[in-house]
Image (cartoon, rainbow, N blue to C red; front, side, top):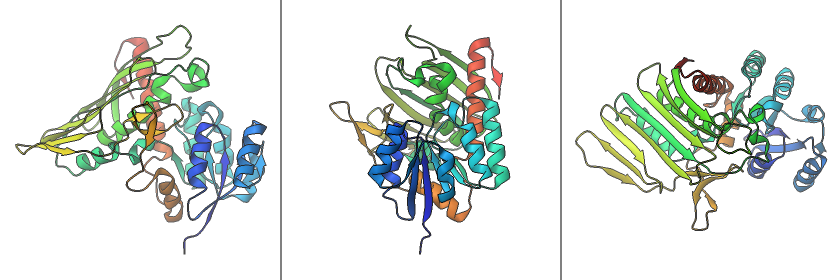
Length: 342
């Protein structure tokens, strides 16, 4: 019989409520308390789930074994360090942090405490990203030549915390780190980065358009391009190897060809669109995201399986630290006009 894991929710904004709706229905998981600095948010979800609600996260730690943290990246270090000290398993939204010293302290603390520490890099759990990785990892495409993502999500972040560089780290950390995490999943560790970021609109106080070329330690390159200021949405994903290639079209159709063989077409219900609330799927004719169910293990299921099996998550905190270091190198490259080693 599956052991029930008692869970506390910390940070009840859009992503906190998004995850709570899923977690509250999961077998083997019991939400035992929720917390937010804003009383209205804490009370609303607490009453909705019929669980105690708090304004101070310390008050819920005595009743839970794990925490699900959806606070902002600049407001996360103390929570993670405290929860690690209390031997709680920890899931946090991405990125790991906005500052390198915070990220290093969090990864070190959770490692020393021996707790599971996982980040919300959901592309590894969604198609077509998961499907492409499986194809590449099988070896049928040969050695990596090139991999890429381009995801444009035009949205005015001016009046949100995302719109301030010191809070969100700009588009390439908040949004683009999803893509960099996935590219690292394909290509491995990054050796050097050549990048460009810029602020486009006068109302913004953060980078909102960025592009970079990643040089992988094991060979091959990756490119990433993300934007909040593109006016039009767009998405392109692909991998080219020495023996074949796989490319995803704008409508989610996946095309694959290996060697001299025929081109194969997979019309999968792919998650090629995203909105600021974290909904991932495909847009309908009215522009609304139609959520796509994960075909295998969800990001939530993975976290709790890792707790039960004491295994390392595929989006562990250490992976998030490497992704953060890559983004910081990208930003430094943009400032200096030079290629920067990670």
